[in-house]
Length: 592
Image (cartoon, rainbow, N blue to C red; front, side, top):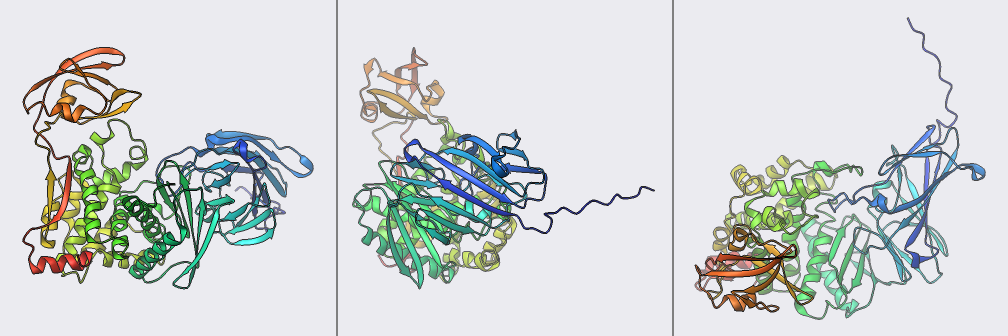
């Protein structure tokens, strides 16, 4: 019998670890953050630290750790500690019996998107996943973050609560690392607009200049907030922050539990269509504070920051949200029925002009987000479909199915409300089966065949069948004078470059690839933007000789032109809409 040897009690065993960060930016123009992490009372002789490789809401391994440099570890009295790197995002420090360990590193930040970091002489913006190392086994430790401002006129906007304000040093509290990741920071001389909706505090931080008139935008923000709050029965926060970056180019948003980040064209607010697009973006990201941040798939209930988090349900997380980002501004009175149908027509056009819808099932698109959606290449349109886009189409079908069956007394709204009560409020993740079950319960119908066809196969969606009860028809707009070739060109420095070759098209069968330069059609030089007009001189079945450069080698090939295809699709009311159809349509989209 082996006798157990008593282990001396660890002198730090009764202590709870304490974790604090400091983010400094003494020379913003260098794009370098200086990060300090202080850990007290760590109950091990080694400290393992990792850097997240992705951020929730953006499903791609982004390798944030590639921007980290100048890593060092310190004990008391400037004692430098030994450390080693075990993997691309994993550092291990020998700390022995030290009570306090300080980690320092610098982080390069010069990528302005909603999911990365940007630091220059005008401002600092950072996301937690792209900024902070975390101790392995310490994700649940409460923590504080101090921002050391480079100038006294800079201010800080974040959803985290301020717990200490010492002028140029402002300290914020986070319940754990997840909350830190979920709370981006905007730091600088941004505009800050405060407003109240339904008794809750809201802020809009605007960095950049353009033709935005904040007051008119805030009025629309308030409308969107009220409509979405009404759908879910109130607002699940005390304070919410919108961060808006105005740039010359770029578009996007990233949702967080009590905030969101938005990036939009600085001159995109006076032209009606662009303004509507911006309000759809706002509606989308704000909707996510329910659908995704609180109502979320089981696979995303607990985040693994070290690897992919696979789920087949992003079609609902993003696709249903995309469907509602068209609906919400319409319900809010920001635009009307005709504008909604115009926007829906554009979405359907994108969907039906994507050949990949006939190759990749929707659930697979969700599961493979990590290797496909965010890694678009020239062939992507032929072999994949966005779960945003097809998920939006499937959500449309489900909403119309339920509305038609119950004369608008039920809708997809009821599905979301039940999900909110069952999963969102308690913050428990749903399985794909539970999601489908709740949708079927609301529809009072066995939908297993529906889900099999439209989530797990590439069968065409019966859009016209579902639109017809609402007095709408889907029309394909075809330019009969332009036979189909299957090339999408772009003019680059005076050259006509192939950007996309449609699968199974005449150009595809002829071997013309993206990256090729088109020179001439039937021996006559092709000038910039001339392709559609030149094709008008031909008929389907005609043979056309194309001269082009392929990998710098002069090539010539002959293609047989095909029948014209719809260039766009339009959802429009039937000429003879019945009273029942008009009633259903008005119940869905309001009066004309």
